[in-house]
Image: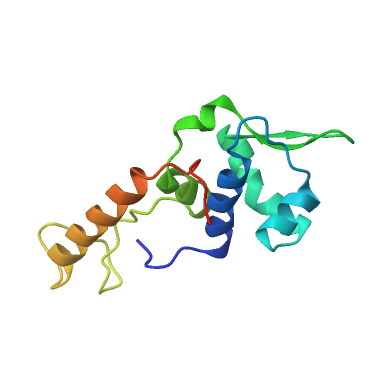
Length: 132
């Protein structure tokens, strides 16, 4: 697992929070302005959320982005993984090799506990909660 959250994943979590109030629909330029990004980058950020079924993209002059009913229980961890991929890679954090139970590195236990704590917190944090 990486120790940083990418800019795309950060913006995706913020976008879900901005779209969370019931009835909210934002056009790409409005969402981009609220996120401090360009409309083109917003499309890259929101695309995986549309694919996951959490965001609806409605074309046309009255269209925009809105949350689907499926987004109601989505967690911050799920949004991050939709953007950046799985947080568990099976790779050793200290060496360039697969992490195996028979050959663990000195960081294995500490990293496993820290990773579990972090992912549990992110999994328990609703992405639809308002974000500052």
